Amino acid sequence: MAELGAEARRAKESGADWLHIDVFDGHFAPNLSFGPQTVADLRSWSDIFFDVHLMLARPMDHIERFAKAGADLITVHVEAEGDVTATLAAVRELGCRVGVSLMPGTPAEMATAHLEQVDLVLPMTVRPGFSGQKFMPEVLGTITEIAEAVEERDLPVDIQADGGVSRDTIPALVKAGVNVFVAGSAAYGAPDLGEAIAELRETATDARRELG
Image (cartoon, rainbow, N blue to C red):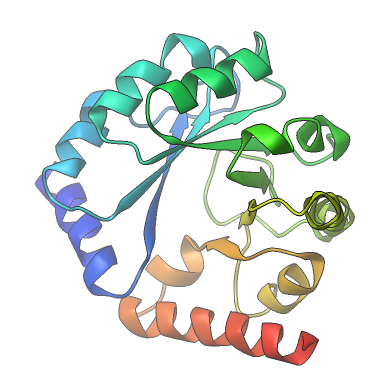
């Protein structure tokens, strides 16, 4: 736990704005990962913004524990079991920011139906479960549809990308409408975390500038 806590602290010290925490249950997505107690333990190490992404079959059964553990933002999937509208409302009632996510191949309207309820939309750009997967450019069209809906409704909703985010893929993501980036391998696989984060941020800034 000390090593994870030190990494959370290092993320903030290296310039990260948020710490993205993927939670798998082994059913909704392959692999198993952190539970709410781990999130609570991490919170004791750092006050960085906790972006908790629940890839769980039944998120409604778990959101309260993650909120109490210290999550600042909780994102749930449109493909999960249960009433998505009710789950998003429950996250809001717990005092957290609200996110909705969709798998590659899921139609954009599954997320845009909930735009008025959320602070963030996360279209996955890889199949979830394991780090280091190849970016799926076919998701860019879905991102563009979501971004257009956000703009048309004039909503303060962020669009996040998670999966295969790198200096090579950020320009296309920015063009599609992404403004929040989750960098795993591109950041933690680099020799210097702070330098990697700075370079990724600079790439995003340059891409936005080119769009005018």
